[in-house]
Every structure is written in C-alpha cells, then in structure tokens.
Image (cartoon, rainbow, N blue to C red; front, top):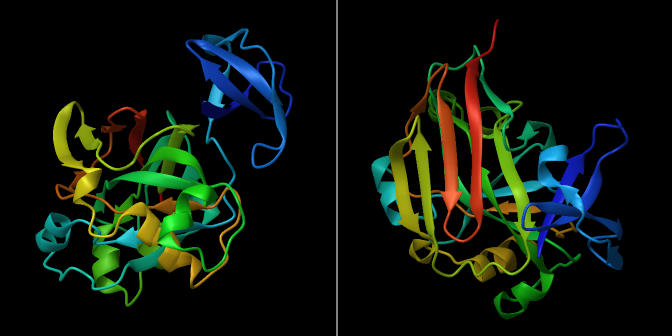
Length: 256
C-alpha cells in the first residue's frame, strides 16, 4: 500500500490517504495503529500531495556508501555515523529548495528513507521490520562549505527546505537491492544500489534505537551514494528509487 497525505481544494486540514492507480482514498483512524481505508474515488489530479508524514525527529546516516566516503576524503565509519535534521527543514515533492545566503555551495544527496511505524528502544536488527511502517524517498540537502567549516553538522544540514521527502510511504517496498538515482536538469549525478550500503536498514534501526527511542513517524535517512554535487539557482533536482517512485524539487536562491 502507498500511504499519502494530501490537501483538497476545500481548504480543510490535510488528510491521510492511500493510492490505487491514479485515485486516492481517504484513510480514517491512525495509520500507525487501527485505521480504515475508504474507497479510492478521488482523482489524484484533484488533490495536492504533501509530505506523507509529520516526523518528530529525522535521524540521518553519514558515509554509509563506501564511494561517497571516498569522494569527500573520509574514512568509512566502523559504526553508523548519525546526525539529525530538524522537522522544520521538511518539504514535499514539488516544493522549492531555497539556497541560503550563508552558503556558497549547496549539494544534493539522494537517499532511501525508512519511516518508523511503532515505538521502540533497543530493537534488534532481526526485529527491525516489525518497527518500520514503510519507505519513502529523500534528499539530504547539505551546505557543503558549512559542513566543512563547522565542528558539527546541524547548520549545514538544518536549513529550512533542506529535507525534501515523499511523495508517499510504500509499506510493501523491499529495500535490499534497488537502484537510487539523482538527476539535475535531467543529467545523471548519482546512481547506486541500496545493496551497496555499509550498514543495512536493520543494522541502522538497531544502532539508532540503542541511543534513542524511535517513535511512529520518525524518519531514518539511510545515507547517500557517490556523485553528490552542487545545486544552483534555477535547477530542478529529481531523486528516484527503483520500484518506489520519484521526487522533484526546483532550486531557488533565497534573498538575504
């Protein structure tokens, strides 16, 4: 099932729904617990999809692909290297990424994102599937110059609009071997398979939950392949994951 959040033209608060072809059906109840699906009768063209959940926290994994670690001159971590992005950085498919005036080099990072579906702490890698609602597509937008100059990464990763994800959560997706690509203005920048991760999703869930309790709706950005590069004013960046979908975002310079 593909879970979405959407807005309708009547201006009412966003709803959760599910997709069936090019139709949307409302979901009543709690997507992390008991819910009921209504018939998929609303044309997708009549609604606006927004980020498919509201994360309480966004945990990201750095240098989880060997070639990406190498391209930035870093060693591959012996344990997962984690950091966080604030929920205020979230935008959805079709929204605009704004380049902040504080940075002279902002880059894309295409990533598979796991969405937590059940509260858990000290989860084993073997049990991780039980705690994952599904998967979505993300772009860990990064101010690379600030990442290099600061002692930690909060500023470089945390600007508003630096966390595009969506357009839906796929509850049936298999993350073991799917191709991730990133194109800017149609030109290929990144391409790798999720099988190339240093630490797989189960290991990441186990490691992160040994540090902090994971809550329903939390996101885990699982790392980016090599090929990260600069985003410029006027660009369009598209992140696609085989069997999962695509998100596209325009890029615009933010005024000082």
